Amino acid sequence: MLGLKLPTDPRWVNIVEKNIEEILTDHAFCEQKATSTAISLIVSFPEYTDLVQEMTALVKEEISHFKMVHDKIIERGWVLGRDRRDDYVLQLIKFFPKGGSRTTQLTHRLLYAALIEARSCERFRLLSEELEDQELATFYRNLMVSEANHYTMFLGFARQYGDKKEVDTKWQALLEYEAEIMRNLGTYESIHG
Ligand SMILES: [Fe+2]
Ligand SMILES: [Fe+2]
Image (cartoon, rainbow, N blue to C red; front, side, top):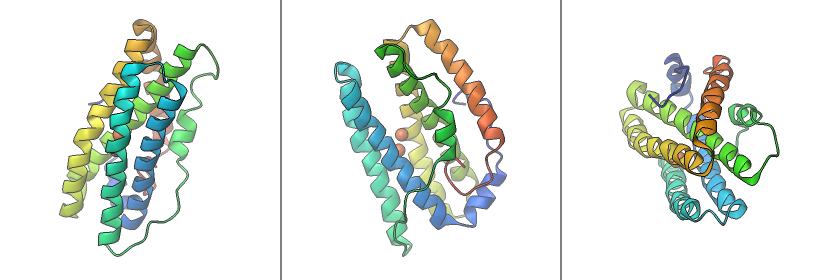
């Protein structure tokens, strides 16, 4: 599923389960960052009309996910904490060299976004299957469906705007690199940790 090279060890859910407040806080900011990424793509690449249209829709969807998670935090009697550092993403975005043509920079950003969506979707699926908290499991099942569409949309745009063969080669290389990052993760109660 999703082309990922290394599945998450299901024991990660046991870690998450011990600290639901922490995972919800981290998750809320993942949705905020997804919103910010969509806005940033509009600002950086306004001439890509199809992309701008889709990113506009995505901003609304991701901020509505943020609200869904925020509502869960409130329901449980908590207050949203500060943003957490996402070491996974910080490592991931080191893969492609900086610079290059505008199209190259765009395709790199789209591939990063596709991969982050794919991994998030995999983590949501695991939460939906393994969490003992049934209310939260259902919540993650619903989110999983929309995140799967996001992954294919970003990958589709990368193939549409870049050279398809080159993009596919880069995508495979990025998947390999991501699997290496994941080998050292799965030990912390965050969406990508
Ligand atoms: Fe989302
Ligand atoms: Fe998403």
